[in-house]
Image (cartoon, rainbow, N blue to C red; front, side):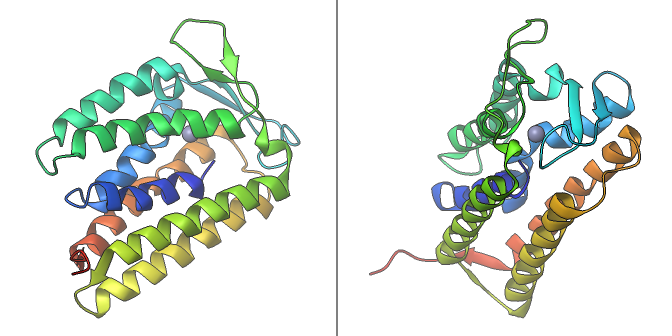
Amino acid sequence: MFIGHFGLGFAAKRAAPGVSLAILFLAAQFADTLWPFLVAAGVEQVRIDPGHTAVTPLDFVSYPWSHSLLMLAVWGVLLGWMFRTVDRRAFAVIAALVLSHWVLDVVSHAPAMPLTITGSTHLGLGLWNSLAGTAAVEVAMFAAGVWLYQSSTYAVNRKGELLLVALCAFLLVLYLGNLFGPPPPSAQAVASAGLATWLLIAWAYLLDRHRQQRPPPA
Ligand SMILES: [Zn+2]
């Protein structure tokens, strides 16, 4: 799953308005921000296997540190604890977002999602076997999330509008490129592309500074 995670990050702004969108993105995508480094270091493994699923040629051979239920619970508690003071719901929302990555990836991935670091149980419902199904679910989640974000905040200047529109357009183009583009040349290329998530987090930080929480209707 890709933009579905970002959709959830956007949506979470309504639940914890004091938390920057950048932190919400980091939480929703924590597994995928960690993963490129672990692949580059050889700690986790991915293989290119064209046709592995309809959506992606990536065969996630091993990714227990970034993608197991156990570790995402641990990362969620740690990240939530780090930012616990910025909003009264920050801890719960951030921890839940980190963990949501596991749930959404179980829905989309082939049965490869680990429960623990060493266990042999791997889950995956394989939404990725259907290109149309994947696109429908993710685009709907993304649209709902953006709608919740833009309706619970307002732009304090032009930048607050433009950065949001440009971010959404960029994410959608990136997503369509993922769905319909050629398979990546190598696992290392995949890992490098994964670093783009950090750019999106920086973008969200800038955007969020030019928007403010909408006051509750009187
Ligand atoms: Zn993931």
